[in-house]
Image 1 (spheres, rainbow, N blue to C red):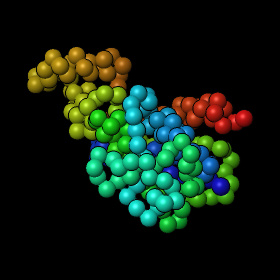
Image 2: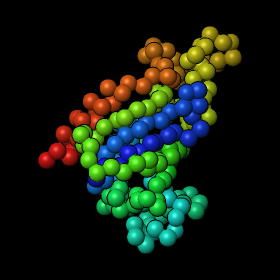
Image 3: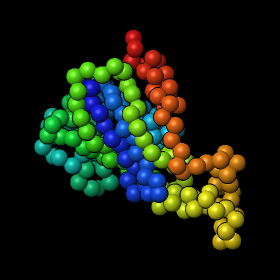
Length: 195
């Protein structure tokens, strides 16, 4: 059985940053983290958490800890498979990457199907992944303004020091390369799941 997910970076606008993918239901949450890193474009440099609000599920999936004193619980990512959590009744959770900058992603189960031609497939997406260490979603909005119009007089030296390299790399917040992401996914699959 296969799950179709939409993963969206919260509060990212102009453009929104999201990915849609299809994957097998027996993927663990640890593997799901690695897949999210690949499809979103992150570099796996920071800690992460999968968070849920539904306290009734915790007896089934195991509560590890509370997250920042909020009413959110961290899933046991190493042992738990996607099918242990997601169902017709439970279709969403939150993925947080880089606990300092809190890149918050909504993960929504859109569909469940019996068979799919490819074991792991990116179906669509929009928007480039923010650069690592760019300061969180609100700082990223400022980075996009800087990249769009770097000659504005209000940009001070710190912006140039921190993000000037993005100009040299031709960073475009609208970029998303579906074919390249699929190649990365299949490489990951062959190295981790094809045995």
